[in-house]
Length: 90
Image (cartoon, rainbow, N blue to C red; front, side):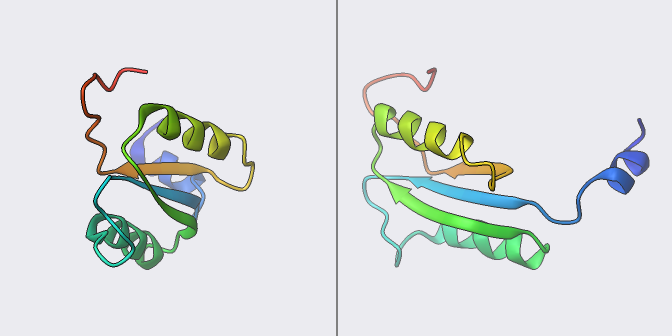
């Protein structure tokens, strides 16, 4: 399938969950998560939810798993992850 054919069959809008992973960011300082949300909105997509959680591998896994089970969310976007003291492989 060519890129043109793919775009012709792709949805015009997808429902997104934006997850910022940080020990230091707040709603006021999460410029990356905010920018992602704004860009998605401008492109016609729907940001279903935007959340900031602490940098903890188990919490990250639990949060992503929970949203993978949500049939109203089609895309999960993460930003800011810098897992301390370990690798990112899960």
